[in-house]
Length: 79
Image 1: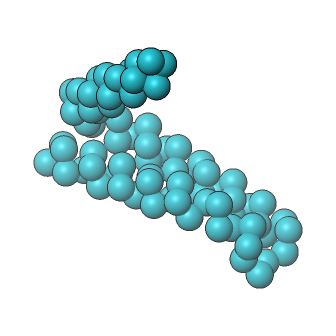
Image 2: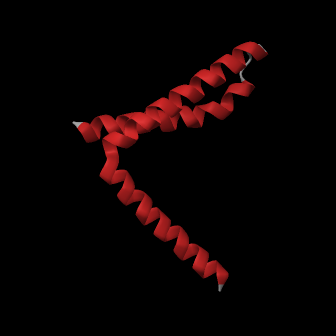
Image 3: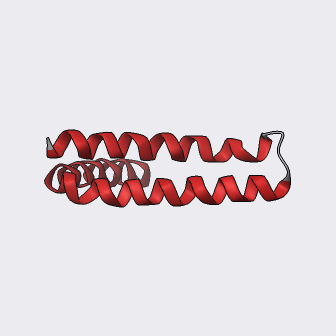
């Protein structure tokens, strides 16, 4: 149950982050765009930081694999 809630919050956060850059192109007033952009940003951050403690071990393992992959790419590019 913990993992399902964690992944659900993480997915919602990612969707909010994907939608955030589209807000300036909506046919709204500037004040409304600022309000919506701020709200979506805060919502994305809150859902992200709620998901991380729920996924603890899984997230740490993912970031370690991702970091090793990036380091490998950097070493190859350096040659």
